[in-house]
Image (cartoon, rainbow, N blue to C red; front, side, top):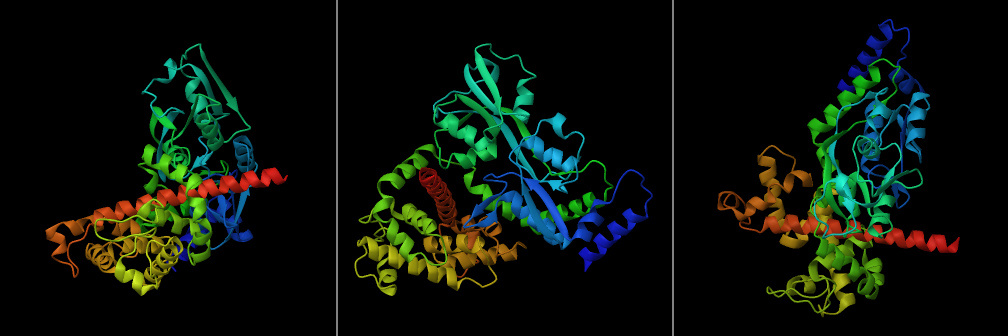
Length: 454
């Protein structure tokens, strides 16, 4: 009710204020019962997962449409200039984009609240490349046309041996791929995209930071009153206060903040050489989760070694204890198929035993943590989280309290006592990295097969 009253007030005040040259875009959105948002395809912005829309920007824009109680319509643009032109011509209501626009391109538009920070970094294909200043590099440097990076370079006196070009045919992710493949020596991108891309191309390295803490903000039409802006400010205030913004950031970015080059490189090699032996079984026995998640869980447990044994006696591809193996019908833990089937059953049981109100992806993260240290210790951490006034159903909150289970001050307050909750957090974040890396590799395989068929 509060939301409806506030929006009605915004609309009423705006409509009662005499404005000759500005129209009320919020009224237009509510009357047509549709919010039209412009964006681009990208790993952060908007993409399809199992034919369903996903992405950090997409979830935020869907949330804003729900806030306004209207339908969301997403329009995809391949060129940044076309995106801004559509906004200026009132073909869309706002721009929610991860593209790094140059300041001169956006100065005419209204800007929403800041909701994300990132750095602008110079990227090389050499993981051993030393830190270097941009004016001192030589070779080829390719950028997106009209980007913040090209704006920055136009202000600098660069080495005359540097061949830098702007392009409209490549997006930021493609430019990173060109650098990784050594077709281009350098590009400049945002630090968040770089970290995400390193899950599949770990040899990429940031060799200089050009600008720190750049702000990401949505763009609104220039010639409108402040009614839609007011609703946008209230929406972002609400998702920030409720913790939803932190949850989204955790979902898409927290696990990629720290990436081990050697670890990811070995994982990618294992995807090519070892995973094919077990892939069909992962697909066969996965139920409510992607088979790639089950495979990532197995890699974290055993590095896909069916004869793996830990000092505590767990063994096999899914590293099952003897009691767990008996519980799920596994008679020989080192049998690859039995282990995958048993591990899948056990993970599903953990997943099902969590409170029904916990939804994906938090439900998946909790089940992974429970696979590592047990439901009892996970519940202890959830109780500590609730006592502290945070939400025990959110992974972003609970993962702050899991590491406290190693401290006597905290585990003395719990039912199940001491546990290596710090290890469980790292365990979950590792699996998330492997999962996302594997998803990227599978997507590339599918695209390659589709191109061959054409």
